[in-house]
Image (tube, rainbow, N blue to C red; front, side):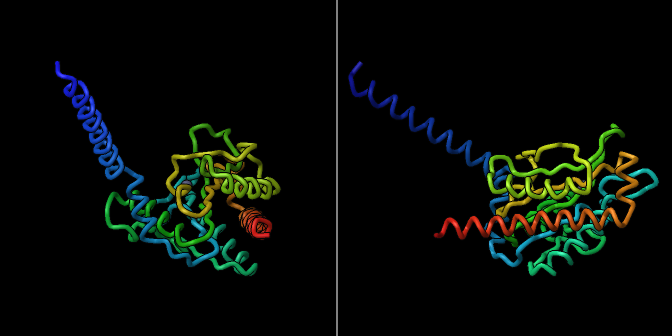
Length: 245
Ligand SMILES: [Zn+2]
């Protein structure tokens, strides 16, 4: 066999493999979630708020349902509206994904209602320097109770943010998870700014449900979450000043 064939064939094969890998990579990327997120990131890079507050669910989506037809969407909205007042009083420019009983699926054109709602919230998160999504949990086991704070896995700043909020939350509510919980599957956490998702308790746990039904407890939660946010904002600006010296 002439020598040039031995050289050329592997080269061609090499390029074919590279092209194939590239095509498969592009196919996977454009047809998958990262592409949707990428598009929304590009479309919404203008920062309008210091913080975006997201009360979960709303409208036809009740979220978790507690005994007696009690809906998560109402409790988290009440907590978040109080947080908005507290944080505005502290001088922060606050954005809300919703301020009444509706979802935000109207912000995105394609996909199922649930998907459009989720991406609508994601889109709004990207308009802020910081974000928090507030929820109440549900599970089959009625003994599960307490708060959980999720943050984006492998993002150091997000973890610090989550830890500071957890420390404040612990003052008013028992914890389900002693430590902040990393997640890389929750879309909201993948937004540009640090975003945490807080489960304030379990709608399926009788004690948590009773607590959440108490307006004073919801006010306590609103203050604890806001205190955590303020402390993180202060920590972050101190870090920036230190780094710029
Ligand atoms: Zn929820």
